[in-house]
Amino acid sequence: MEKRSLLAVVLSAAVFIVYYGFFYKPPAKPKAPPPAAAAPAAPAPAPPVPSVSGSPAAAPTPPAPSAPELTSELESPLVRGKFSSRSGLPVEWLLNKYFLEPGRKGPNIDLLREVAGTYPLSLLLFPGQGVITPNFQLAESGKGFLNYRGQVGDVAVQQRLEFLGTDYTLQVQLRLENRGSAPLTFSPGLRLEVQQNPLSQRGFWIFKEAPNLKFPLYRLGTSVERHHNVDKLGAFQEQSGEISWTGLEDHYFLSMLLARTVSPQNRVAYGKVAGGVFTQLQYAPEALAPGQARDYQFTLYLGPKDPALLKTFGEARLDQAVDYGWFSLIALPILQLLKLFHSFLHNWGLAIIALTLLIKLILHPLTRKSMQSMKAMQALQPQLQKLREKYADNREQLNLQTMELFKRHKVNPMGGCLPMLIQMPIYIALYKVLYNATDLYHAPFFAFYQDLSAPDPYFIMPILLGVFMVLQQKMTPSTADPAQAKIMMIMPVVFSLFMIFLPLGLVLYIFVNTVLTVLQQWMNQKDIHLIDLLRGGKKTA
Image (cartoon, rainbow, N blue to C red; front, side, top):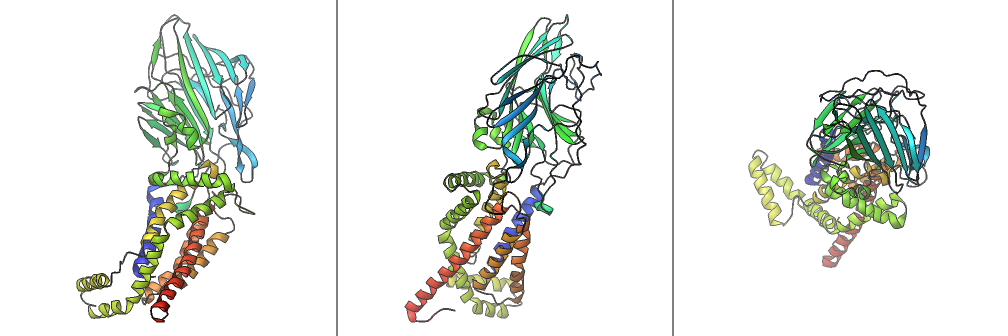
């Protein structure tokens, strides 16, 4: 391989490493959460306070609730939800199609893993106050709905939950009535506080991933703010403005709180708690006169990062919660193609192979031209060596004469670089798809490969990739530069080491692409030999 092809490989690898080493910040591993309590303690009802505060105020401890806690369940083919009469909100949200371990093993994914001593979802009523627990009573229940009623001081609280069961959403309708003798200022909202998943990170260095750790995000105006650095996440941070939603994300799932009304006074808060993380969304403060009532609405989305489902939220733009980075324009078509291939192949590994074949077919003319350019460069090596010797002390003249030589023989010095440079954005986009598309979460391939989103546990694919890279080098026109030859000898080893820490699906793509390149190179050489023979009976070496 001539120098510029080597440069393309090195620069492409450097782009990949720099992008994920400096621009993409892998999450830090959180401290292990404390063991969960047998039952969460009921937080204190906060007294009505008409002022707005910039930090959360601790609520006084009330007497123990008189009514016992009752649980209710709502279930669909997608979700099993458990609800508590203390909070009037779900305390468990199991996804029937998704499991913690590959092969549909282990418990179902629970998007509401409670932090010890708290409820995963809680009600906020007053500005600057903590969560309150009205100790609801279940007033009515039916197919897909629960009606709760409770009292907090002079405030009557009614909460209706509607669960259609056709998707992963839950509608929360809240009605507040001031039954006191003085005006009260409300700032109703919901707080989401969950455990970090106990599964540890996987990978190494810049490829270290923690696919089940959760991080806060929110939408302010038209932009999305994300906080993926656990170490820098404070105990309580807040922001006011046109907040349309907030929530917690991991690589594959979302737990989101959506506001029905968006105003410049909406507030979001988020932070780190012992063993977990929280976020909360509150409406703008509003005063209610004695006897006055007001209705508020929220939507909860607790489900997979499915772009099709998220687009159904329309102007709320919940689809922006899925981040494919700089290469989203490539990642989304790749995901759609993978889904198309999977629809008739019924295997995500085969879908990745089909995607590789399609991209290879599209790039075939460019790859063939690149190989011809490399062969032409090899033919010019003796003349290039003479120029290096002649102008050893004049770098500028050497460059001028070299370019003149290329021009005279109509050789593009960058011709060998283009296929690799074009493939690098595809590699990175596929990497992001594998770490964000729930369809590929624990997606099996065959035999002992049961998770395409995880690294190869047996290192078989990275080793095979290294073998085929060596074979590719043997078939590539060699260079007279011994230093360059030594570098090329270690490139398969370096690439194989990188592949050990990357998702199996991405390694599969690169491996199949390399095998096809070797095959294409062999066929291309045969074509060139045949042309040489037809032209004069001289077979090129």
